[in-house]
Image (tube, rainbow, N blue to C red; front, side):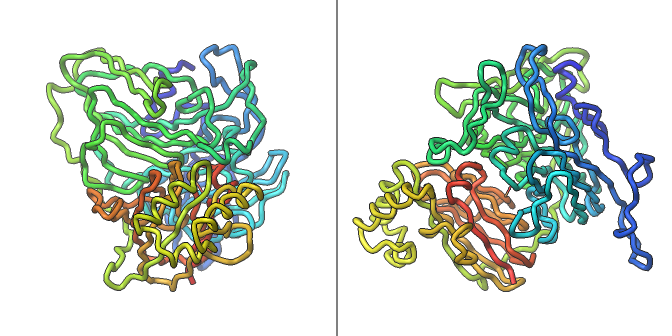
Length: 505
Ligand code: C2O
Ligand code: CU
Protein backbone atom coordinates (compact mmCIF):
# COMPACT_ATOMS: atom_id res chain seq x y z
CA UNK A 1 0.00 0.00 0.00
CA UNK A 2 1.32 3.41 -0.90
CA UNK A 3 0.85 6.57 1.09
CA UNK A 4 -1.14 7.99 -1.78
CA UNK A 5 -3.85 5.41 -1.66
CA UNK A 6 -4.39 5.95 2.03
CA UNK A 7 -5.77 9.38 1.30
CA UNK A 8 -8.31 8.14 -1.15
CA UNK A 9 -11.40 7.01 0.54
CA UNK A 10 -13.76 6.00 -2.18
CA UNK A 11 -17.47 6.20 -1.67
CA UNK A 12 -17.55 2.68 -0.31
CA UNK A 13 -14.13 1.38 0.54
CA UNK A 14 -11.80 2.97 3.02
CA UNK A 15 -8.46 1.79 1.82
CA UNK A 16 -6.82 1.11 5.11
CA UNK A 17 -6.13 -2.43 6.15
CA UNK A 18 -8.93 -3.94 4.16
CA UNK A 19 -11.57 -2.71 6.57
CA UNK A 20 -15.06 -3.64 5.59
CA UNK A 21 -18.52 -2.59 6.52
CA UNK A 22 -20.85 -5.49 6.48
CA UNK A 23 -24.30 -4.54 5.34
CA UNK A 24 -27.39 -6.48 6.25
CA UNK A 25 -27.53 -8.09 2.82
CA UNK A 26 -23.86 -8.93 2.70
CA UNK A 27 -22.65 -12.37 3.66
CA UNK A 28 -20.11 -11.15 6.15
CA UNK A 29 -20.47 -14.09 8.48
CA UNK A 30 -21.68 -12.03 11.41
CA UNK A 31 -24.65 -13.47 13.26
CA UNK A 32 -27.91 -11.62 13.04
CA UNK A 33 -28.46 -11.39 16.75
CA UNK A 34 -31.79 -12.77 17.72
CA UNK A 35 -31.92 -10.61 20.81
CA UNK A 36 -32.23 -7.60 18.57
CA UNK A 37 -34.42 -8.76 15.72
CA UNK A 38 -37.41 -9.68 17.84
CA UNK A 39 -40.49 -11.06 16.20
CA UNK A 40 -43.39 -8.67 15.98
CA UNK A 41 -41.15 -5.63 16.11
CA UNK A 42 -41.96 -2.82 13.69
CA UNK A 43 -39.95 -3.48 10.56
CA UNK A 44 -36.36 -2.54 11.34
CA UNK A 45 -34.61 0.01 9.17
CA UNK A 46 -31.67 -1.24 7.16
CA UNK A 47 -29.14 -2.56 9.56
CA UNK A 48 -25.39 -2.35 9.41
CA UNK A 49 -23.50 -4.92 11.47
CA UNK A 50 -20.03 -4.25 12.69
CA UNK A 51 -17.62 -6.17 14.81
CA UNK A 52 -15.07 -4.01 16.61
CA UNK A 53 -12.19 -5.75 18.28
CA UNK A 54 -9.75 -3.50 20.09
CA UNK A 55 -6.38 -5.13 20.69
CA UNK A 56 -2.65 -5.00 20.16
CA UNK A 57 -1.35 -4.39 16.66
CA UNK A 58 1.46 -2.67 14.76
CA UNK A 59 1.41 0.40 12.54
CA UNK A 60 3.76 2.33 10.24
CA UNK A 61 3.53 5.74 11.81
CA UNK A 62 6.90 7.11 10.74
CA UNK A 63 8.29 7.78 7.30
CA UNK A 64 10.60 4.76 7.33
CA UNK A 65 8.12 1.99 6.47
CA UNK A 66 10.50 -0.64 7.85
CA UNK A 67 9.82 0.72 11.33
CA UNK A 68 6.67 -0.48 13.00
CA UNK A 69 5.19 0.88 16.20
CA UNK A 70 3.30 -1.24 18.71
CA UNK A 71 -0.19 0.23 18.93
CA UNK A 72 -3.66 -0.59 20.15
CA UNK A 73 -6.13 -0.66 17.31
CA UNK A 74 -9.65 -1.64 16.34
CA UNK A 75 -9.51 -4.72 14.11
CA UNK A 76 -5.76 -4.29 13.73
CA UNK A 77 -5.72 -0.99 11.86
CA UNK A 78 -5.14 2.65 12.81
CA UNK A 79 -7.61 4.22 12.35
CA UNK A 80 -10.13 1.48 12.98
CA UNK A 81 -12.49 0.43 10.19
CA UNK A 82 -14.58 3.14 8.66
CA UNK A 83 -18.22 2.68 9.55
CA UNK A 84 -20.26 4.07 6.70
CA UNK A 85 -23.98 4.04 7.12
CA UNK A 86 -26.96 5.92 5.73
CA UNK A 87 -28.97 8.42 7.77
CA UNK A 88 -31.88 6.63 9.42
CA UNK A 89 -30.22 3.23 9.35
CA UNK A 90 -29.50 1.19 12.44
CA UNK A 91 -26.02 0.27 13.60
CA UNK A 92 -25.36 -2.91 15.52
CA UNK A 93 -21.80 -2.91 16.70
CA UNK A 94 -20.41 -5.66 18.84
CA UNK A 95 -17.40 -4.75 20.95
CA UNK A 96 -15.11 -7.69 21.73
CA UNK A 97 -12.42 -6.61 24.11
CA UNK A 98 -9.04 -8.19 23.37
CA UNK A 99 -7.16 -5.46 25.24
CA UNK A 100 -5.35 -6.18 28.52
CA UNK A 101 -7.66 -3.69 30.26
CA UNK A 102 -11.30 -2.58 30.45
CA UNK A 103 -12.76 -0.55 27.63
CA UNK A 104 -15.96 0.83 26.09
CA UNK A 105 -16.92 2.55 22.85
CA UNK A 106 -18.23 6.10 22.79
CA UNK A 107 -19.93 7.30 19.60
CA UNK A 108 -18.71 10.86 19.51
CA UNK A 109 -21.32 13.39 18.38
CA UNK A 110 -24.17 10.94 17.87
CA UNK A 111 -27.53 11.71 19.44
CA UNK A 112 -28.31 8.20 20.64
CA UNK A 113 -29.87 6.66 23.76
CA UNK A 114 -27.91 7.16 26.97
CA UNK A 115 -27.34 3.44 27.52
CA UNK A 116 -25.38 3.32 24.24
CA UNK A 117 -23.11 6.30 25.03
CA UNK A 118 -20.21 4.20 26.29
CA UNK A 119 -19.16 6.07 29.44
CA UNK A 120 -18.10 3.58 32.12
CA UNK A 121 -19.61 4.24 35.52
CA UNK A 122 -22.17 6.61 33.99
CA UNK A 123 -23.96 4.83 31.15
CA UNK A 124 -22.61 1.26 31.38
CA UNK A 125 -20.12 -0.97 33.16
CA UNK A 126 -16.72 -1.09 31.51
CA UNK A 127 -16.17 -4.18 29.37
CA UNK A 128 -13.56 -6.47 30.92
CA UNK A 129 -10.75 -8.08 28.93
CA UNK A 130 -12.32 -10.96 27.03
CA UNK A 131 -15.78 -9.49 27.47
CA UNK A 132 -18.16 -8.06 24.92
CA UNK A 133 -20.95 -5.51 24.60
CA UNK A 134 -23.56 -4.91 21.90
CA UNK A 135 -24.23 -1.33 20.88
CA UNK A 136 -27.45 -0.90 18.92
CA UNK A 137 -28.89 2.43 17.85
CA UNK A 138 -30.42 4.33 14.94
CA UNK A 139 -28.56 7.17 13.25
CA UNK A 140 -30.73 10.30 13.31
CA UNK A 141 -28.20 12.71 11.81
CA UNK A 142 -26.04 12.66 8.70
CA UNK A 143 -22.45 13.80 8.99
CA UNK A 144 -18.89 13.10 10.04
CA UNK A 145 -18.61 11.41 13.43
CA UNK A 146 -16.21 9.02 15.11
CA UNK A 147 -15.88 6.34 17.73
CA UNK A 148 -13.32 5.87 20.47
CA UNK A 149 -13.02 4.31 23.95
CA UNK A 150 -14.16 6.22 27.02
CA UNK A 151 -12.21 4.14 29.55
CA UNK A 152 -8.65 5.17 30.35
CA UNK A 153 -9.06 7.43 27.34
CA UNK A 154 -5.68 9.16 27.54
CA UNK A 155 -3.87 5.87 27.04
CA UNK A 156 -6.41 4.11 24.83
CA UNK A 157 -6.70 6.97 22.32
CA UNK A 158 -3.03 7.76 22.73
CA UNK A 159 -2.19 4.21 21.62
CA UNK A 160 -4.37 4.40 18.52
CA UNK A 161 -7.96 3.41 19.36
CA UNK A 162 -10.33 5.49 17.23
CA UNK A 163 -12.17 5.23 13.93
CA UNK A 164 -14.42 7.24 11.61
CA UNK A 165 -18.18 6.91 11.52
CA UNK A 166 -19.66 8.48 8.40
CA UNK A 167 -23.40 8.89 8.16
CA UNK A 168 -24.31 9.56 4.55
CA UNK A 169 -27.07 11.97 3.60
CA UNK A 170 -30.06 10.29 1.98
CA UNK A 171 -29.42 12.71 -0.88
CA UNK A 172 -25.61 12.85 -0.99
CA UNK A 173 -23.66 15.90 -2.01
CA UNK A 174 -22.42 15.86 -5.59
CA UNK A 175 -18.61 15.75 -5.68
CA UNK A 176 -15.94 13.99 -7.75
CA UNK A 177 -14.19 12.48 -4.80
CA UNK A 178 -14.60 12.17 -1.09
CA UNK A 179 -11.76 11.98 1.41
CA UNK A 180 -11.64 11.32 5.14
CA UNK A 181 -8.55 12.59 6.94
CA UNK A 182 -8.15 11.69 10.57
CA UNK A 183 -5.36 13.69 12.11
CA UNK A 184 -3.46 12.36 15.09
CA UNK A 185 -0.41 13.18 17.09
CA UNK A 186 1.82 10.57 18.74
CA UNK A 187 4.51 10.78 21.36
CA UNK A 188 7.16 8.32 20.23
CA UNK A 189 10.59 7.55 21.65
CA UNK A 190 13.79 7.09 19.61
CA UNK A 191 12.82 3.53 18.73
CA UNK A 192 9.44 4.80 17.46
CA UNK A 193 7.65 3.16 20.38
CA UNK A 194 4.83 4.94 22.16
CA UNK A 195 5.99 6.81 25.24
CA UNK A 196 4.19 5.10 28.11
CA UNK A 197 4.14 8.12 30.43
CA UNK A 198 0.41 8.77 30.19
CA UNK A 199 -1.24 11.35 32.46
CA UNK A 200 2.08 13.05 33.26
CA UNK A 201 1.39 15.96 35.61
CA UNK A 202 2.96 18.43 33.19
CA UNK A 203 0.59 17.30 30.39
CA UNK A 204 -2.41 17.42 32.71
CA UNK A 205 -1.68 20.97 33.89
CA UNK A 206 -0.53 22.44 30.56
CA UNK A 207 -1.62 21.76 26.95
CA UNK A 208 -2.25 18.01 27.27
CA UNK A 209 -0.10 15.26 25.83
CA UNK A 210 1.47 16.85 22.77
CA UNK A 211 3.46 14.41 20.65
CA UNK A 212 6.28 14.53 18.15
CA UNK A 213 4.82 12.61 15.19
CA UNK A 214 1.74 13.69 13.26
CA UNK A 215 -0.18 11.17 11.15
CA UNK A 216 -3.04 11.34 8.67
CA UNK A 217 -5.14 8.17 8.66
CA UNK A 218 -2.42 6.50 10.73
CA UNK A 219 0.31 7.20 8.17
CA UNK A 220 2.96 9.87 7.78
CA UNK A 221 1.73 12.83 5.72
CA UNK A 222 1.95 11.98 2.03
CA UNK A 223 1.14 13.20 -1.43
CA UNK A 224 -2.26 13.08 -3.03
CA UNK A 225 -2.60 13.33 -6.83
CA UNK A 226 -5.66 15.29 -7.92
CA UNK A 227 -7.03 16.33 -11.30
CA UNK A 228 -7.50 19.93 -12.43
CA UNK A 229 -11.07 21.06 -11.84
CA UNK A 230 -11.89 18.23 -9.46
CA UNK A 231 -14.37 18.89 -6.66
CA UNK A 232 -13.40 17.16 -3.42
CA UNK A 233 -15.33 16.73 -0.20
CA UNK A 234 -12.86 16.51 2.65
CA UNK A 235 -13.98 15.23 6.01
CA UNK A 236 -11.46 16.31 8.66
CA UNK A 237 -11.30 14.94 12.18
CA UNK A 238 -8.87 15.56 15.03
CA UNK A 239 -8.29 12.40 17.08
CA UNK A 240 -5.25 13.68 19.00
CA UNK A 241 -5.14 13.66 22.81
CA UNK A 242 -4.11 17.27 23.10
CA UNK A 243 -2.82 18.78 19.87
CA UNK A 244 -4.85 21.55 18.28
CA UNK A 245 -4.31 21.95 14.54
CA UNK A 246 -4.42 25.32 12.79
CA UNK A 247 -4.70 24.40 9.14
CA UNK A 248 -3.48 26.48 6.24
CA UNK A 249 -4.86 25.28 2.88
CA UNK A 250 -2.43 27.23 0.74
CA UNK A 251 -4.50 28.84 -2.07
CA UNK A 252 -7.20 26.20 -2.08
CA UNK A 253 -9.76 28.34 -0.19
CA UNK A 254 -12.00 25.54 1.11
CA UNK A 255 -15.71 26.07 1.67
CA UNK A 256 -16.98 24.89 5.05
CA UNK A 257 -20.20 22.91 4.56
CA UNK A 258 -20.53 21.13 7.92
CA UNK A 259 -19.11 21.41 11.42
CA UNK A 260 -19.11 18.53 13.90
CA UNK A 261 -21.19 16.62 11.38
CA UNK A 262 -23.99 19.16 11.09
CA UNK A 263 -24.63 21.19 7.94
CA UNK A 264 -23.80 24.89 8.11
CA UNK A 265 -24.46 27.58 5.51
CA UNK A 266 -21.62 26.98 3.02
CA UNK A 267 -19.06 29.67 3.65
CA UNK A 268 -15.39 30.51 3.47
CA UNK A 269 -13.93 31.09 6.92
CA UNK A 270 -12.67 34.65 7.46
CA UNK A 271 -9.87 33.36 9.67
CA UNK A 272 -6.70 32.52 7.75
CA UNK A 273 -6.30 29.23 9.62
CA UNK A 274 -8.90 26.58 10.33
CA UNK A 275 -8.72 25.72 14.05
CA UNK A 276 -9.36 22.05 14.74
CA UNK A 277 -9.28 21.11 18.41
CA UNK A 278 -9.34 17.49 19.64
CA UNK A 279 -12.72 15.90 18.93
CA UNK A 280 -13.76 18.49 16.34
CA UNK A 281 -14.70 17.87 12.68
CA UNK A 282 -15.07 19.95 9.55
CA UNK A 283 -16.55 18.96 6.19
CA UNK A 284 -14.96 21.03 3.43
CA UNK A 285 -15.49 21.38 -0.29
CA UNK A 286 -12.31 22.03 -2.24
CA UNK A 287 -12.32 22.89 -5.94
CA UNK A 288 -8.94 22.16 -7.51
CA UNK A 289 -8.02 25.05 -9.81
CA UNK A 290 -8.06 24.29 -13.53
CA UNK A 291 -5.08 26.51 -14.25
CA UNK A 292 -2.13 27.97 -12.38
CA UNK A 293 -0.42 26.34 -9.42
CA UNK A 294 0.02 22.58 -9.68
CA UNK A 295 1.04 21.83 -6.16
CA UNK A 296 -0.47 22.80 -2.85
CA UNK A 297 0.63 22.14 0.70
CA UNK A 298 -1.77 21.74 3.61
CA UNK A 299 0.13 22.89 6.70
CA UNK A 300 -0.52 22.94 10.42
CA UNK A 301 0.69 26.24 11.86
CA UNK A 302 -0.67 26.07 15.39
CA UNK A 303 2.67 26.25 17.15
CA UNK A 304 4.95 29.04 15.99
CA UNK A 305 8.06 27.61 14.45
CA UNK A 306 6.79 24.02 14.70
CA UNK A 307 4.83 23.63 11.51
CA UNK A 308 3.71 20.24 10.26
CA UNK A 309 2.94 19.30 6.72
CA UNK A 310 -0.40 17.49 6.70
CA UNK A 311 -0.54 16.73 2.98
CA UNK A 312 0.75 17.75 -0.44
CA UNK A 313 -1.65 17.92 -3.34
CA UNK A 314 -0.14 17.45 -6.79
CA UNK A 315 -2.37 18.51 -9.65
CA UNK A 316 -1.90 16.39 -12.74
CA UNK A 317 -3.74 14.78 -15.63
CA UNK A 318 -6.49 16.04 -17.82
CA UNK A 319 -8.91 18.62 -16.47
CA UNK A 320 -12.17 17.16 -15.19
CA UNK A 321 -14.02 20.27 -16.36
CA UNK A 322 -13.07 23.76 -17.45
CA UNK A 323 -14.27 25.73 -14.44
CA UNK A 324 -15.84 25.48 -11.00
CA UNK A 325 -19.01 23.35 -11.10
CA UNK A 326 -22.18 25.14 -10.08
CA UNK A 327 -23.39 22.19 -8.02
CA UNK A 328 -25.19 22.97 -4.80
CA UNK A 329 -23.05 22.81 -1.65
CA UNK A 330 -25.86 23.20 0.87
CA UNK A 331 -26.73 20.07 2.83
CA UNK A 332 -30.16 19.36 4.23
CA UNK A 333 -30.26 20.22 7.95
CA UNK A 334 -30.35 17.41 10.48
CA UNK A 335 -33.50 17.04 12.59
CA UNK A 336 -32.04 18.76 15.66
CA UNK A 337 -34.71 20.53 17.73
CA UNK A 338 -34.37 24.32 17.76
CA UNK A 339 -33.98 25.77 21.28
CA UNK A 340 -36.56 28.35 22.31
CA UNK A 341 -34.32 31.16 23.52
CA UNK A 342 -37.13 33.12 25.18
CA UNK A 343 -38.30 30.17 27.24
CA UNK A 344 -34.86 28.79 28.05
CA UNK A 345 -33.26 28.36 31.44
CA UNK A 346 -29.81 29.86 31.87
CA UNK A 347 -26.81 28.25 33.47
CA UNK A 348 -23.13 28.97 33.56
CA UNK A 349 -20.05 26.87 33.91
CA UNK A 350 -16.81 28.50 34.98
CA UNK A 351 -13.67 26.59 34.07
CA UNK A 352 -10.67 27.43 36.24
CA UNK A 353 -7.28 26.14 37.24
CA UNK A 354 -4.11 25.16 35.40
CA UNK A 355 -0.86 27.06 35.13
CA UNK A 356 -1.40 30.82 35.38
CA UNK A 357 -5.12 30.27 35.81
CA UNK A 358 -5.41 32.53 38.85
CA UNK A 359 -4.49 35.52 36.72
CA UNK A 360 -7.24 34.95 34.17
CA UNK A 361 -9.82 34.22 36.85
CA UNK A 362 -8.87 37.48 38.52
CA UNK A 363 -9.17 39.43 35.25
CA UNK A 364 -12.57 37.99 34.46
CA UNK A 365 -13.71 38.82 37.97
CA UNK A 366 -12.43 42.38 37.72
CA UNK A 367 -14.17 42.88 34.37
CA UNK A 368 -17.40 41.74 36.03
CA UNK A 369 -17.94 38.71 33.80
CA UNK A 370 -17.43 36.38 36.71
CA UNK A 371 -19.75 37.64 39.42
CA UNK A 372 -19.27 37.43 43.21
CA UNK A 373 -22.16 34.96 43.16
CA UNK A 374 -20.29 32.66 40.79
CA UNK A 375 -17.15 32.94 42.90
CA UNK A 376 -19.20 32.07 45.94
CA UNK A 377 -20.50 28.97 44.27
CA UNK A 378 -16.89 28.07 43.56
CA UNK A 379 -16.15 28.42 47.27
CA UNK A 380 -14.12 31.59 46.81
CA UNK A 381 -14.83 34.58 49.03
CA UNK A 382 -12.06 36.96 48.07
CA UNK A 383 -8.82 37.23 46.14
CA UNK A 384 -6.95 35.41 48.89
CA UNK A 385 -9.48 32.61 48.62
CA UNK A 386 -8.77 32.42 44.92
CA UNK A 387 -5.08 31.83 45.60
CA UNK A 388 -5.91 29.21 48.22
CA UNK A 389 -8.19 27.36 45.85
CA UNK A 390 -5.54 27.26 43.13
CA UNK A 391 -2.99 25.95 45.59
CA UNK A 392 -5.19 23.28 47.10
CA UNK A 393 -6.29 22.14 43.65
CA UNK A 394 -2.79 21.61 42.38
CA UNK A 395 -1.86 19.92 45.65
CA UNK A 396 -4.63 17.35 45.24
CA UNK A 397 -3.81 16.59 41.62
CA UNK A 398 -7.09 18.14 40.53
CA UNK A 399 -5.58 20.81 38.38
CA UNK A 400 -8.81 21.96 36.77
CA UNK A 401 -12.25 22.69 38.12
CA UNK A 402 -15.75 23.36 36.83
CA UNK A 403 -17.64 25.81 39.05
CA UNK A 404 -14.92 25.27 41.60
CA UNK A 405 -15.16 21.53 42.03
CA UNK A 406 -14.41 18.29 40.31
CA UNK A 407 -17.96 17.10 39.76
CA UNK A 408 -16.97 13.96 37.91
CA UNK A 409 -15.38 12.51 40.97
CA UNK A 410 -16.61 14.23 44.11
CA UNK A 411 -20.04 12.66 44.03
CA UNK A 412 -21.82 16.00 44.32
CA UNK A 413 -24.05 15.05 41.43
CA UNK A 414 -24.65 16.81 38.15
CA UNK A 415 -23.52 20.33 37.32
CA UNK A 416 -26.86 21.11 35.75
CA UNK A 417 -30.20 19.29 35.90
CA UNK A 418 -32.75 19.91 33.15
CA UNK A 419 -36.32 18.86 32.53
CA UNK A 420 -36.75 16.78 29.44
CA UNK A 421 -37.69 18.98 26.49
CA UNK A 422 -36.48 22.12 28.17
CA UNK A 423 -34.42 24.66 26.22
CA UNK A 424 -31.17 25.47 27.93
CA UNK A 425 -28.80 28.37 27.43
CA UNK A 426 -25.37 27.68 28.79
CA UNK A 427 -22.54 30.15 29.20
CA UNK A 428 -19.13 28.50 29.28
CA UNK A 429 -16.42 30.69 30.78
CA UNK A 430 -12.79 29.86 30.26
CA UNK A 431 -11.10 31.40 33.29
CA UNK A 432 -7.81 29.66 32.48
CA UNK A 433 -4.75 30.50 30.44
CA UNK A 434 -5.31 27.57 28.03
CA UNK A 435 -7.56 26.61 25.13
CA UNK A 436 -10.24 24.02 25.82
CA UNK A 437 -12.42 22.09 23.34
CA UNK A 438 -15.49 21.46 25.50
CA UNK A 439 -17.56 18.49 24.34
CA UNK A 440 -21.17 17.69 25.29
CA UNK A 441 -22.44 14.13 24.91
CA UNK A 442 -25.82 13.10 23.52
CA UNK A 443 -26.86 16.47 22.07
CA UNK A 444 -25.94 19.00 19.45
CA UNK A 445 -25.92 22.63 20.59
CA UNK A 446 -26.10 25.88 18.73
CA UNK A 447 -23.10 28.13 19.18
CA UNK A 448 -24.74 31.52 19.72
CA UNK A 449 -22.05 33.97 20.77
CA UNK A 450 -18.45 34.48 21.78
CA UNK A 451 -17.82 37.28 24.28
CA UNK A 452 -21.39 38.51 23.69
CA UNK A 453 -20.83 38.88 19.92
CA UNK A 454 -23.16 36.69 17.83
CA UNK A 455 -21.26 34.02 15.91
CA UNK A 456 -21.61 33.77 12.11
CA UNK A 457 -24.06 31.06 10.98
CA UNK A 458 -24.56 29.90 14.60
CA UNK A 459 -23.48 26.33 13.78
CA UNK A 460 -24.64 23.16 15.50
CA UNK A 461 -21.69 21.65 17.33
CA UNK A 462 -20.85 19.02 19.90
CA UNK A 463 -17.42 20.43 20.71
CA UNK A 464 -16.58 24.12 21.06
CA UNK A 465 -13.06 25.46 21.28
CA UNK A 466 -12.83 28.20 23.91
CA UNK A 467 -9.90 30.58 24.15
CA UNK A 468 -8.33 31.83 27.38
CA UNK A 469 -10.56 34.42 29.01
CA UNK A 470 -13.33 33.79 26.47
CA UNK A 471 -17.05 33.41 27.22
CA UNK A 472 -19.08 31.25 24.88
CA UNK A 473 -22.84 30.96 24.81
CA UNK A 474 -24.53 27.81 23.58
CA UNK A 475 -28.14 26.60 23.51
CA UNK A 476 -29.82 23.26 23.06
CA UNK A 477 -33.01 21.38 23.79
CA UNK A 478 -32.50 18.80 26.53
CA UNK A 479 -34.46 16.16 24.66
CA UNK A 480 -32.33 13.12 25.41
CA UNK A 481 -32.85 11.73 28.93
CA UNK A 482 -29.91 10.56 31.00
CA UNK A 483 -26.63 11.67 32.52
CA UNK A 484 -24.42 13.21 29.85
CA UNK A 485 -20.79 14.11 30.17
CA UNK A 486 -19.61 17.61 29.36
CA UNK A 487 -15.83 17.64 29.35
CA UNK A 488 -12.70 19.02 27.81
CA UNK A 489 -11.58 16.85 24.88
CA UNK A 490 -7.96 17.54 25.69
CA UNK A 491 -7.99 14.16 27.37
CA UNK A 492 -5.40 15.02 30.03
CA UNK A 493 -7.51 18.01 31.11
CA UNK A 494 -10.43 15.70 31.73
CA UNK A 495 -8.18 13.53 33.90
CA UNK A 496 -7.28 16.71 35.79
CA UNK A 497 -10.93 17.45 36.62
CA UNK A 498 -12.29 19.32 33.60
CA UNK A 499 -15.44 17.24 33.40
CA UNK A 500 -18.95 17.06 34.74
CA UNK A 501 -22.45 15.83 34.09
CA UNK A 502 -25.56 17.41 32.67
CA UNK A 503 -28.60 15.46 33.80
CA UNK A 504 -31.71 15.38 31.62
CA UNK A 505 -34.68 14.04 33.57
CU1 C2O B 1 -15.02 12.13 22.10
CU2 C2O B 1 -16.47 12.20 25.94
O1 C2O B 1 -15.73 12.12 24.04
CU1 CU C 1 -8.97 21.59 28.31
